[in-house]
Image (tube, rainbow, N blue to C red; front, side):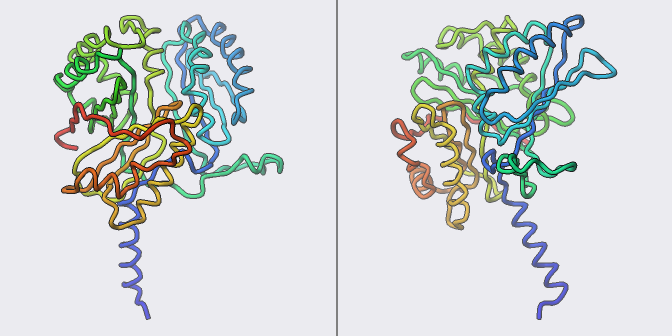
Length: 363
């Protein structure tokens, strides 16, 4: 018979195992709540309202959109809140990361001082039951996920073919910015990879991602690097122009759609793989890779400690940290990283070239 102390010990051991394993994903089918905090220029409230009403009528026809609501602060008329509900995260991400969305929100730029977007899966709710017709599209997240306090994000852009060696040289030689942003936010790690003419910069932050990104963008050494690569970019930008910079970094955003960590031990080497998705199949490919990661995580012999999948349109990148001392080819082969679903690929998966990988001393 199992004693009370043994049951407690077993429960503690289970808790430690659950805590060590981190899994964050947009693919659990839960409903999504999106919150957009907006700071409107003084005197531009009516202009903002008219732009929102035009935007609202367009968003209503986007697949996966359920509803939205616009609120104005009772204390400060310049502060507005937009909330929207979506059937799940993938259709929202497909829309918000599209060129259609970039053009759709442009009328708001002239009347908005600042915005902040927050995305949440719905775990519980109170109130009346949803209509039966909506039940299939109103799934709640079944249980809370366990995080590790790190926010993962990436930026990607392309450079002019033939300029890759010069761009890599510029990006590899810069003084890193101060990692501590404020009392609650700091940079944990920045890894930069290239494949052909595509650049991917993966960023890990503890605290507030937006605050960290703005902190980095203001650093003189970072601004100098950004200016140095401007002539080589395929998409022109002017960082001195707020609208040009906003559009560039909106298009460059490469959000993390899935992350799994199976062990807290320090990682060995870090690799990135690029997966060319068939046109229109990027989200489906990212979801297939996430299922592959979840399955591999069940194997105690899996050489991968952490895996993060980033996706925007048909750009899909997987970042992998392997156990110390494990050969790269062995790790990538055993994890299945080089054998994604071929039906979703428009070419072969490719290992990206590491340009720089910098960690905070106290990470």
